[in-house]
Structures are given as structure tokens and as C-alpha cells.
Length: 396
Length: 156
Figure (cartoon, helix red, strand yellow):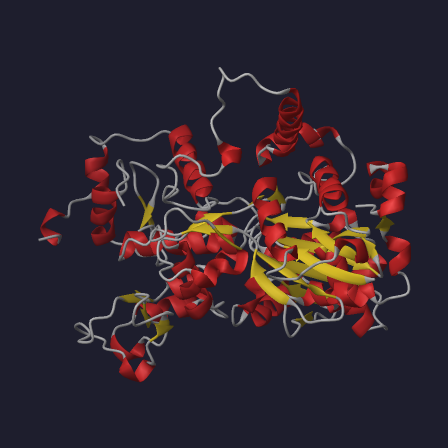
């Protein structure tokens, strides 16, 4: 029997069979200004010739699955003949859900997977549990790990002791990739060019030019300087979707510091925006969100756990999720944690090769592990006991 | 030009309208909510009637066949169960009464560090507060821009 692993994120779905590689596909639908009547699903975004002013229809709200109509359309597309050609009578599925998922969402999910799609078995699990499984199978000597999962909707800090999730230590910081993109959109629109409609383009800008500063106020000073002394400022060439398909940064030697470019492209000049935006992850209070940043939340989480475990958690901080890809993220987090943690405890922050698909890879490993059959709920179980058996087995 | 208009912000304050704490808080909440939005613009399809036979407007006068009716009730049932937004779901869970860790208890607490302040116009560290709305600014030039565009109005 084939096993399909689906890390169902709010922005992208990480999907693939357990014997194949992962595909990262947008988990949403789009409408474009140019082809008004059509709705594009998931990876059909590549068919859109002019993705300016792209309209997003997301199945998730604040990280929780609420719009099942959209989600089913995306799944229909993913499972269907254009993508994964799932043979439901011979496939089991591993699917992820957020921490503290609501019971009504869980019920709907198992119902849809078993009754609409007719999967043979389902394993519903937190993405973090898959990441933890991945970490412990690559580091068998470690006892504990602390996952930092910074995704599209929010950032979760989740401690695991072996395969056990320490629920009392889970912390959520309501800062994710969506908030960062929207904030960047807002400040660019206010300061230079109206881009409020261009979520898709500005998200790319964010991924291309933003970084996490190691010395925040020093970088602030540098970005205020004039001319070539200002090593922070970058000129970003916006795509026009005819000759420039994808935006890019002007190479520093081609930058014009005074006056205009003669080439006539549309340029965004980004200085303090480059590092002030990802700074929200470390100081949400900068935009008036009364919450601790990631480093403080980690310390708060670890302090709520038994004392004899604390040293292990500080040594095994693992970063997953797209926001950890900002350059300098790991170094900054390690430095801040070092200054907050008790002096006698060593601190180590690990960033895996691919933090976005790290939990998917964990699911792949889990599908081949001998414990897998113990964890799943089969069709027969579900038909016999209904939702009750899922609640019992998936102990979330 | 800009510099000529410069006057003391404190002297002027007496004549200006001052927003109270509640209004300031409301503005902040509105700004934070805006950061959660998926789209700023309207759905390009919203001006058109929804496509497909499934989304057709209900025809009240039509006499319905029994089998069709059965399907429809199932659809309604699905809609009721599956069409709930985040806030409704959160309320339904009644989490504040539960003892075990849950969505509400997992929220990160307020920071123990003092808040940092940045100019709401240019983004650099700021030392001054707008007496009218409580926004931050770093120089009289930024204050001018702030008053013209954001302070009591909200033009973008």
C-alpha cells in the first residue's frame, strides 16, 4: 500500500508519496485581473501570464482550516489525475494539523478523508511531531528537542521529549510570514509606491532582500548614511511581467546613488525595511503587538518544563518553517538565546538543510518506521468506531 | 518650504484635537487586523454572478423533486458544519474554562522588555510622540508628513 504524506500548511502544501520526493505547492486558489472568469488552483499559478494584482483565496484563517470548499478543491486537484493520481483504495495518508486544532475541524477532516476520498487509513499528526521524529532519527543520542516552527500564520515553540509532546511548554507568537509581507507592503506603499494589491510580488521582494540584523541599531545607523557608505540600501527591480518575469536586486556596482536610472525599470529603494521587517519576529512590540519575541518565548517555554530537562532543550533548538530562511536568523537567535539562558548551560541552535520540508521528510521516515501501523486509524476502525477512535489514537 | 512651517509642537498642542486612549487603542487594533488580511483589493470576480450550477441563487417558486430536496438538505448540513470562521470556532471551543493547555493558554505573554519606538514615517528610531494621536516621529520633517497624511486622517 502506498503512503501519501501531506504537510498541509496554510500557505503551501508539502506533498509526496513516501517513496518519492517532496513537492511544495501553494495550498490556495488564485484569481487574476487579466483572466477574470477563471479561478486557478494550487500550482496552476504557473499558467497565469500576468500575476500582478493576484487575488488569494486561502482555506486557512489564522493558521486553522476553516474554508473547506477551497480546501477540497485544492485537494481534488492535488489527488487528481493532473498531480498525484491517488488510487484511494490502495493509499493511506499522513496529514498534518496545527497545535491545539479545534475538535470540530478534526472531525470534519477525518470525515472528509475517509468518506469523501475513501483513504484506507489516516494518520493525523502535528507537523512538529514529524519534525521531532526526523530529528530524533538523525540524532538518536539526544533525549529532547525544542522545535521553532515559524510559518505563514504564526510561530510555534514546541518542546518534545523523545516522541512525547510537552503540551504545557508550547508557545505561540502571532507573527508569521503573512504578517511580515503585509507589513512590508504597508510601509512600501506609504513611503514610495502603492503596492497594497501586490501581495505576490512583495512576498518575493521580502524573500529576496530581507535579512535578520545581528546588530540592529548599528544597521539602523548604516542605513541612514548617504552614498556608498550606506551598505544596507538595495535597489530592487520590480517585475513588469513582460520583459522582466521575476524581480531582482540591482548588483551593487550598477547602483545609482543620486539621480534616476536611465533604463526605465520600476525600482524600489529599500534601506531599513530590509531588516526592520524580519525584526518583528524578535520584537513584535515594534508594531504594537503585545507579545514576546521568539527568543523570549523560547525561554518562557523552557522555564515551564521540569528543571532536569532544561539543559537538553537549550542544546537542541531546531528551526523549521519558511521564516527561518532569512539570512542571519539562526545566528541572531543563537546570540539572543545565549544572553537570556543561564550562563552555565550550553546553547545550540540547529538549522536543517531545508527547513520548509523538514517535517515532510519526518513524515516520510515515519511511514517506513515499524511503529507506523500502531499509530494509524484504518478504514475498518473508523467505520466501526467513528470519530471516537481518532480522538483516542491521535491524542492531540 | 517645509522648514518654514516648523513651529513648536508643544505650543500648538493646546489648540489641536487630542485622541483619547480608547481611540488610539482602536486604531492600533485596526492596523493589526489589517496585517492579517489575505487581500487588500476586492475579489475581481465579485462584480460578476458566481459561476457554475452549484452556486445558483435559490429559486423559491420552483417545485422541487423529492430526491433533489434530499441532496439539498445534505448540502445545507455540510454548509452549516463547514462554514464557520475562526472566531466562531474559537468561541465554540469554550477554551477559557478548560484547565489543560489550549489555544488561548499557549499565546506568548507580553514582553518584559520595554517597547522600542520607531518613526512611523521613515522607520528610524524616534524620540518624539505626536501629541494628537500618539504616533512616533523622529524629526520635524517627519512630523509634517505625519500630520498631512496620517495623524487625524488616514490617507495612504
